[in-house]
Amino acid sequence: MSTIKTPPERIPRSICHEFVEFIPEILAPDTLYISIEFTTAAHLCFCGCGTKVVTPIRPTGWRFIFDGETVSLRPSIGNWGFSCRSHYWIRNSKIIWARPMTDAAIERGRMRDRYLTDHYFAETSAAHVTDAPSKSEATSRPSPLRRILGKSDD
Image (cartoon, rainbow, N blue to C red; front, side, top):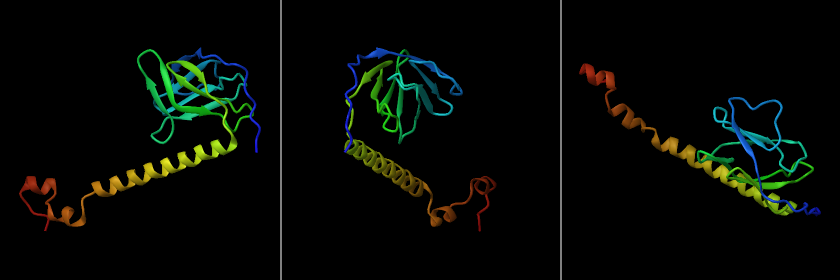
């Protein structure tokens, strides 16, 4: 059983964002760096502990929203592996602090994430299999080049 330290009162605050090709080696505080090319966002933990937080932007990871002015990431960012165990949302370029979570709640969230990831890849895999022509379909149609030339595939 873990004890949960209640963080001092934290009010929402604004952050900056910067679109980059590569995430910089040295990150500025209160800045979210976004690499569209590498579908990744990174920042220094917004609690002030200085730990680098990397969020992969994926269908099974975080989702990134840019409305032309502000940025958002969802779901929330829970830094459970860090000593600070901070938990917050990035919404409309603001840090919104979330409640701390117990170890049991964190494990339930991780199990849900694993389930959703497995489900996503099972659906994606099944979609690729059903999109592929069956062997009979593939062999019953002449190839496009043979159709143009007026020849059959036999």
